[in-house]
Length: 143
Image (cartoon, rainbow, N blue to C red):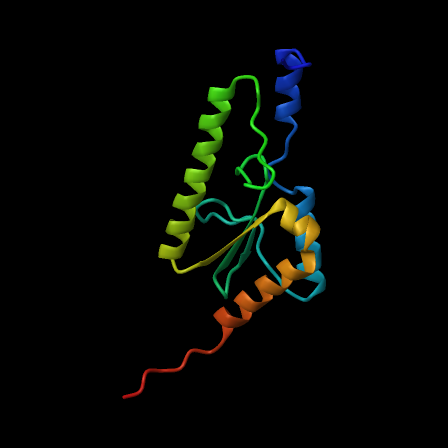
């Protein structure tokens, strides 16, 4: 049983941010400090949290609840069917977005919010490797 009235729960859920979350901001600051520049407001499918335009690398920081993290998923007890369908739809949308971005030539990196919280230097390193790999000059085919 929920301890909040439906109106209180609605207000609470409406205050959950989809952008500029704590993990996103921490990751952005770490990357900026390391000298990496990115775009925040992209019109690409899925609206990546960070986009490295020239390297064509799209980065998402997925919230554990909203994207069904296998380590931290807690299933709501009330309105269970609604939440099951809603969270499943989020996961399916993430998969479609990944495919579309790959089709457009982007490398997609997704990190769980807890990964950013627990292993920020590792996450920054993974992004740096992807940027380096994608920015390396391509050899022309031999004739």
